[in-house]
Amino acid sequence: MKSLPVCTVWLFTCLTASAQSGLHRDVVAAQGGSDRTATIQLDWTLGEAAVQLLETPSGMLTEGFHQPLLSIHKLDEPLPALPAATNATPTLSVRIFPNPTAGSLHILPEGTDFTALNLVLYSAGGDLLQKRSIDSADELDLSPLPSGIYELGLYTDDGSFRAFYRVIKQ
Image (tube, rainbow, N blue to C red; front, side, top):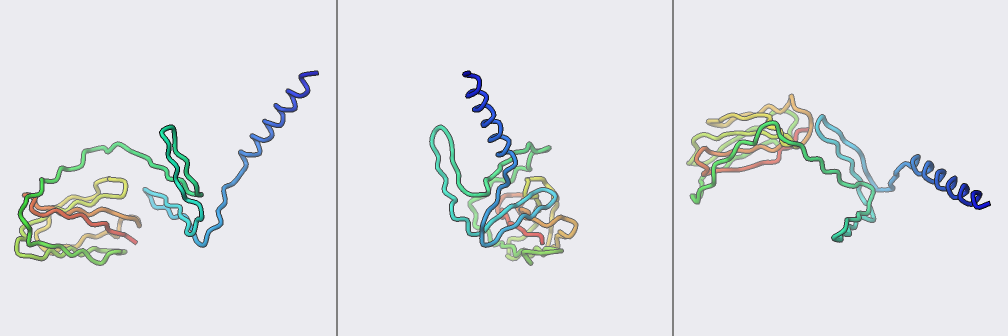
């Protein structure tokens, strides 16, 4: 006699669990989309009403449709160390244009202290894509790379100038 209520509860639990596995997440928003490159996927919505974060020592609760996923990968080789910055105020500046670009990026050093610059280009995932020296105005061809965000670093050997730029490839 007691087995009938136990079987009923067990059956209800199984049916509820199987019904939840078929749920699809939907969102109502003013705008949204999903974009993907070879190295990154970005899902986004505009106008989400509930995006609060609640943290306690025992856990974290977030609201909203899109939840962040942080994936950490070990680099195959260490990033090159940049020389320490000196206290000297450089009279060098660099113009990077056009940004965003679909093809080539122009690098135009300006100033009196210009000797040579080291250039490093990293993907959004931290992969070193290019490393070279430039002696004057130069051009960086981004056309073979997939659309995305890249980090361009320029620095002198003596550390008197260091600058990083976020470059958008369309």
